[in-house]
Amino acid sequence: MTAYTALALQMETRVGAGIGAAIDRIATRVGGSKAWLGPELRLVVLPEYVLTGFPMRESPAQWRDRAALDPGGPEYRALGAVAADHDVFLCVNAYERDEHFPDLFFQATVILSPAGEAVLRYRRLHSLFSPTPYDVWERYLEIYGIDGVLPVARTELGNLAVVASEEILVPELARALALRGAEVLCNPTSEASSPQLTPKAVARRARAVENLAYVVSANSGGLTGIAIPGDSTNGGSEVIDPQGRVLAQAGPGGDAGRRGRAGPRRAAQGPAAARPGQPAQPGQDRAVGGGVRQARRRTARERRARSGGAPGEAAGGHRPVARLSVRRRRCARSCASPAPPAPLPGTPR
Image (cartoon, rainbow, N blue to C red; front, side):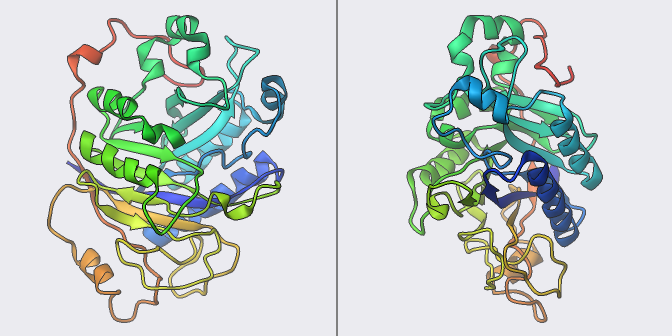
């Protein structure tokens, strides 16, 4: 059984600010979160399209040239360095090119290991707004095999998989990944949030219970640089356990200046990049840490969080962090590939 801390890093999407600036901001926030949460932080999930925003009326060719990354290109190398510098598995969502399909782009989610290497590359299958592998299905399957379509990364943290954004509403996808061994579902998203349960929030809980898997879901902390109102996708990043319970949840916004007591079912407040004892600064992004665990016992830290914090802790100074304990799951025999498939570009065998 493996125990560690997972983090849904809620960040503002700044359209037009540049991919390099977004990577620099990610590096700062991941570093600050590691300093705040400690060495047990091993998995960080970023929001959907945090690097670029999303296409708005651009043609596939225009968006490919404007925002799509090359697998193994300098942007991924820089993000791999962030993962390596802070000893975390980093889950990042981005648009990318594929040399086999030069006229298209795909919405990809890549998990980078502490060695800085891509250990999983998933191309979103269900989308109304972007090309998907289904558009070139036979050729895509011929090149990458079923392991390239439904990848599961077997790591020291357990078996990691990705369900991107609205795909959380597709139960068959999560079940297929669970049958292939997935134990933790990373869910980068950019969606409307609410104090009430939204359809996607209900779906996250359902997918966790149905598949006995953890769900680590990072949402945008607002949008800037486009005409769409900034709060259209804002808040609600959360970590769900296999019983459908919320281990950690964020309120709206990337602004961490507000403080409040953080319990496992309440907003996690406090700056991702601040150290204990330092004041929160407006404009910083918010981190939601959740431990993945199956034991029913509450740790002393959880009990303190539920009671409003230990004496001497600043209100909101500590996130609701629970231990993740992942039991290894075997892949269903029927899902195994008959032969090793070709790896996706930039992904080691």
